[in-house]
Image 1 (tube, rainbow, N blue to C red):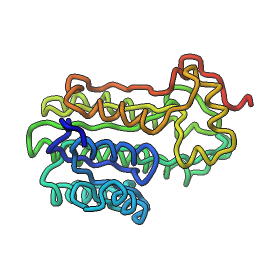
Image 2: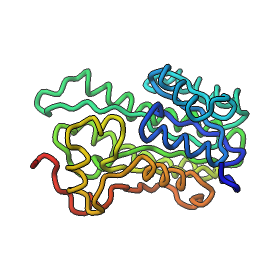
Image 3: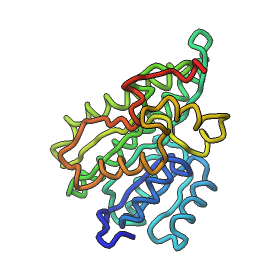
Length: 258
């Protein structure tokens, strides 16, 4: 833990955190003094991830559950309050990607992506903000968007639509939340090395060539930006979206020309 932990005494919820970006955000929050409720749809993965961060179970606990279910989100917030006494930070990182051709994209996939990516984040923000308003003292909410909300990707029309919508949601909620000292922002990662992406053939090689900075992001790159936006250093930043892509959206070469 840092000698002067910036999140000491604060409590955070991070969804979709069993691995990848969400996991690294949780790990860094704990390192900086926070108590963290780590959520993943896979309960076993959530519990193992939390144990890897904190084997004592005192500062990081894993909770399995699907953020597409509003009642679960409400329970998640209540669990954080019951275990740690309050809620200061909510990070909506859970999301799903269902690739598909626009002309044949199935209705079931369409609504599943919307329910997780939009519903899961909207109702997390709602439940978290209610708690923050009730306890006083403000708070921070962060959504994980994507560069696909800024630049078109093949077979990702629905996914990209939801990510762009999250950024508009963050901007819209400034009107609702600022009076209570709650800031709300979004991060938009580009190509990032995670357990999923590194399993794809030549992913790192392709994105190292396409990214102006010469490499895809690491999960630590994304987590550093996330922690800044939910920290006291960013309290006057709200309604904003921060792209973290090594410059890719500035030039936007397509990975499908390979």
